Amino acid sequence: MVDSARVATRWLFPVYTNELNWMFCWSYLMVEPATYEPSTLTWREKKRKFKESKLKDAHTTPLTPRKYYVFYVTMTAITMLRLLLNFAALWLFTSALGDIYPRSDDHTPMTDLPYDYTMYTFHRLHEMKKVWWAGMLFAASTVLHVIAYIIHRFHLVKLTTKNDTDEFNSMAFWFAHVGLLNWLLDIPGISVPTVRLPHVIVIILNATAALLFFCTVYFEKPIITAWGCYAPGTALVDLKYGVCPAFINDPFQPDTPVCDQPGVRCGEGAIRWKNILNETITRTFFISFISITIYFLGVASKVDYYNLSNRLVIETYNNKDG
Image 1: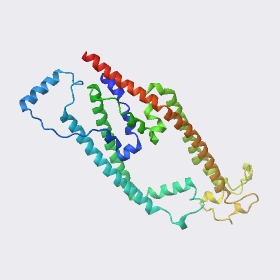
Image 2: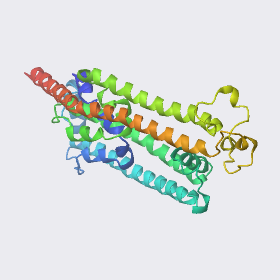
Image 3: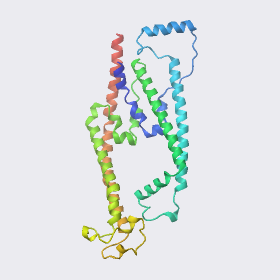
Image 4: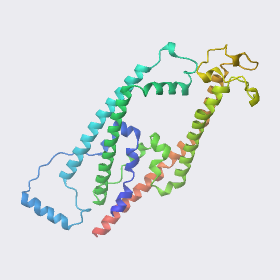
């Protein structure tokens, strides 16, 4: 029955891989509040009760209020600390962004392009101490996030095997689908055999879109930057005047030798790259739209699967008691 409970509680994993939960700890809302109730038993009575519990099935022994209170306090402490770390890291990161945001006279036609401006920002950010401190705080928060998941999952398995819980939290499972990582890898569908084919299709579509964008940015862009000022369809033997000025980060020097040659239009490469990038983004968006549609159409089947798994654990528990 423990194995069945572990299967029935796998829905909790995508809840903790959701970025919004990682940042704002909304999974804590699933933890019911508890108050401390001091025990009225004497030490001998506690010892006798402990020995009696050892003779019973540990997995079906009802959860004591005191144990649940320990779980509640632990989750509360971890959540408060994580929120503090996350907001401190977020403040440091946004402060670093404000420090490097270029002035109006720093803008150029090249840095105004989405990819180039992103890379410009990245290269400036990784040199700042604020960003490193923010990364360390986020890393510490992530470690606590993993610990919180382990504790929460262990507690949920215990509740399920004791038949001390209702159906799984379908609302939290639905909301967990609204996340980048969960969508890219279809994490909610990894353990659901009823959506195996849609799961594979979503991953293939996402990998195709990512590969298309990656190849365009990291392979086609350098070619356009180096030879984009030549006329389209220029033969390789005619590229003998050298690379375009943009390739050597000097797009505003029209007096370079290549710019004096017939058919060469310096500055044309930036325009051509922008058109290629926009076309690639459109294709990537189209593929991603199909993937997102299939991804969300499978949510209902995943919910039905976990509802059925939960009912199976309950029936097993009732049959064992009977």
